[in-house]
Image 1 (cartoon, helix red, strand yellow):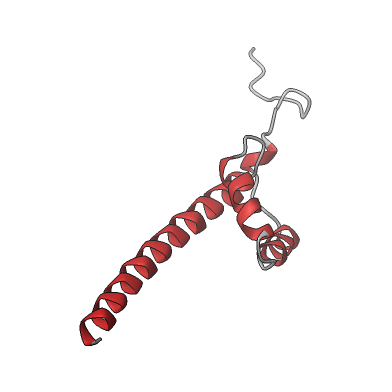
Image 2 (cartoon, rainbow, N blue to C red):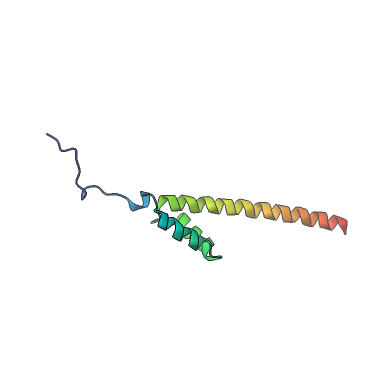
Length: 88
């Protein structure tokens, strides 16, 4: 008869696929609240190889959101500068 059960030694669990704990999220949020450090960590965690999948996806989403806001801010600044130039 075949043994369909695996021992703990035989099961390789990828820690990067495990859900992050509440403590891990709190530390992540505190570190991302520090100016300049947050951008560095977003790139390191967002594109690193040995990073928790949830954290990696969160950081990539944050970087996309930052890029969108940056582009919208540039467009709004140019529009306001154009309006200001017309009034002078």
